[in-house]
Length: 164
Image 1 (cartoon, rainbow, N blue to C red):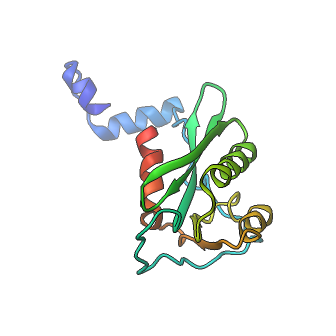
Image 2 (image 1 turned 60 degrees about the vertical axis):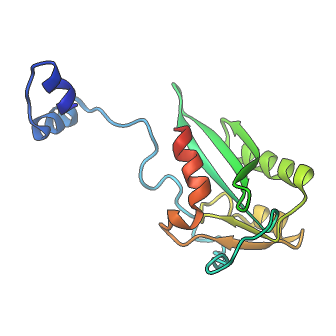
Image 3 (image 1 turned 120 degrees about the horizontal axis):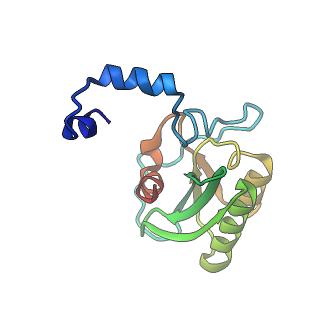
């Protein structure tokens, strides 16, 4: 904002802009820093991909939910990706997180089989007992990133960032 105003011949400092924005009550439309806070009652699985060479398709899949701001609320976009091919296997968007995630996961299983390892973050949706049981009942190992470790799932995180 400071650079934009300086280009318009209104040279003001960043501190003044910050104070005026705060005084006007302007806030970002994106979820806050704790949008994907995990539920403490959900089990956290270990990160299985450390020092693992991913050499073939269907060895490791990852999934993530990204929030896209809309006029009234958010649109939830979930994507399931193969780590080896870095190919999006399935995706869904919805105004409710539960339906989008369940449909994308089932669609990926239906069209591409199943992976040996399924990696997600510790967000409450993927760590819920229902989702863990759905994945584990198929004989798939569950891996979860460490808290705040976006680099553990960098391919799917980058996809969400590119979409935004």
